[in-house]
Image (tube, rainbow, N blue to C red; front, side, top):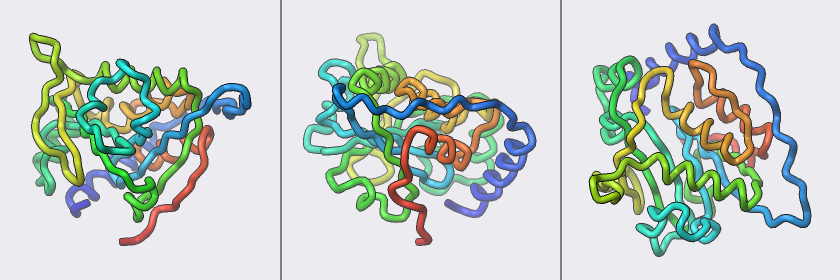
Length: 223
């Protein structure tokens, strides 16, 4: 993360701290031993978080985009401002535009094979157990986030930021009160993890609240 981005994050965190006040209802832990469970993971990237699912657990036909990564064991999904997300080193103007004015958005999908904590060795990782039905709802949420062309196909924008990754057009507007952490919080809520989506939501708040339905399996580390 560059210094300009870090500076804006500090500002937004301060605003979010002053305006936060919603009550979050913790999820009842998934403990039905007779129902098959699946693991998903929430990865803290410092500005936003990605959701990781095992590709082989995805129900057939629910989220066709996973077929773009046929050789991957895991898929990480992120969402954010189109220009900011696709710029490796965004300048201050790009950072401010992403936060203050409604802009176009993208999905970032990464395919990889290593265990999640090994692929993201410096990131905080929370593991969450969900039911197969909750996983299906989560994957439908991913699928519904894709914008499609006139023939109904997903809109591929280009290679992603790292590894085997791709950017896709999303139809939802990005702005300060609908940022990447709001999108991720809604995704987790479809999977039964109530994280809250008050007007300003930071990644630190999101990660902390995910512990109400998951377990931290790796703390963040200094690079």
